[in-house]
Length: 335
Ligand code: AHM
Ligand code: MG
Image (cartoon, rainbow, N blue to C red; front, side, top):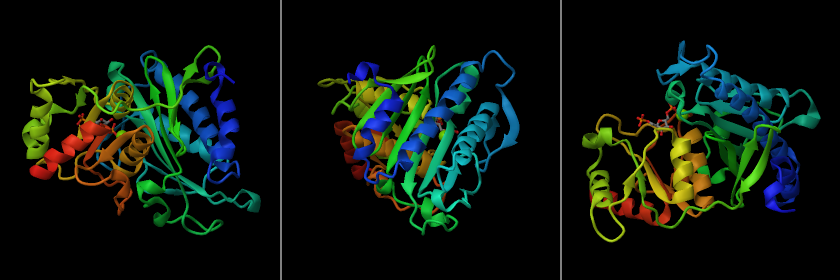
């Protein structure tokens, strides 16, 4: 079948045999994410029309204001996966603790846990800028049929079996990997189906875009300051161009297509940076590596970091191989 008219549903069925474990459970899981993505997309698209934008009046565990759509997306993704009896545990940016899902049905004792940022970049919602959902999937390490424990969630990124994001942008896309490359599907809103529009996505080895919040420049480590100056220097294919949306999914998506580097370094105010290892950096790192890119904390592969807490943060440098390697060189010289 030509990829131009292949739907996500068809793609999942056709590729099920290539998954490492072929019980169909992972396929059902991706399918439930696809469904929740459509529901959230419908809500995000009308955010400007109805009284749903604005803070929900609550704060999450990190003390940030929750937007109404964050709460909505969180509920929808959790509901969809819980009602369909698809996973044994869920951790979310919007939930203080992980959720354990205990099936009484012996035939439905699930193996997978999902970690999710239901609506990343949500400070952009009020101004009609693209936001996204990020997800990461692991096989549980504790025995099937018992309640999940923290151990099931605190796995290194290189243990992920699937990861992806939904970008609610000028068009809505679902981009994911199961460890066999990265494929992107675009939603046809008239029909309500995702179609394979970006098969086998790859970061160009070198790009010309750097994405970083330069407002924090004075607080960055010297290595990052030096790398930014290098990007701005007139030499060879430089100066590079600067693009920063402030919405990780959108910045990553653009860089993957055009070639570039995204950085959220540590700073003198924040020794671990801002982004969360488990449901922001690890899934993006898995996608990046599957798309010929790299993801690093400046010194080591993101996916080799042993997590110790559900909501821990980590400095994040991700994108085209040659650019990430160059940034690491600068970091080694001036950490
Ligand atoms: P959020 O999870 O609270 O939405 O924060 C994550 C977002 C990323 O999408 C984005 O890249 C980053 O925060 C932007 O942060 P800043 O505004 O500090 O540049
Ligand atoms: Mg987030």
